[in-house]
Image (cartoon, rainbow, N blue to C red; front, side, top):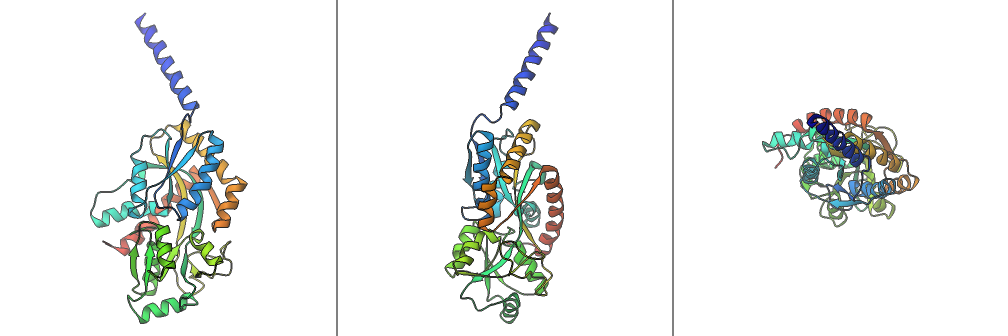
Length: 321
């Protein structure tokens, strides 16, 4: 009798769990954007969250949690309940920060295996942006001046080891130049610093500065990719300018690693819906970054490769306080 009762209870519990998982979501979802408003993660996150809301039938609410090159927000999601109600819109600084923590001798803000990839949304080479009134008309002009005046030129970033810092360090390595780094709390504040004359240059995703290029306030000298940029086809790559520097800034959705599989599958479907939504594609492209979607299996392989490559770059950068 007791055995039959326990079996029945177990079946009811399993059915209840299956029902709960199948009903996901039953309340609003928070999408953590680990940077202030105005940067690539925010630019991509907002239209994606709106489209996911339509597919999921529940609001996906953006919460900006900037700081530490994105590490604070990423750590928040890594430690969040693994129920699908807290998700992350990360940038490629995800691949850098745990290795940077090792080099700095501090406790890791999060571990790579604490977060699980859901979908990649964009993957753009970053661009070298300066004010329109800057004296440099090409990457060669910029590098030649940096060589003549070590430390005199500065650049802003979203934080140490972040997606705006690492590509400039790569450029410095291949050109043997000293360009002064000034970190901010995110891409938005760094762009404001460029426009106001506090910094001379930025390495950033095209979406972050495209509106200022169109308005005539910013000039783009080159990009860290191969071939032509869809949104700025006239801009040469650094390789075309003779400098072997390459870096891509991607954006993608993650959840805590132990999130139940049915919830993961539902979020994957919602991310796929968003990435294929005509409105999302139009908004992100108009901002400067075409959608380059990858589903979870492909994105996971992509991230693993990026972690390996960026780990070597960070080791070369060394300790930055």
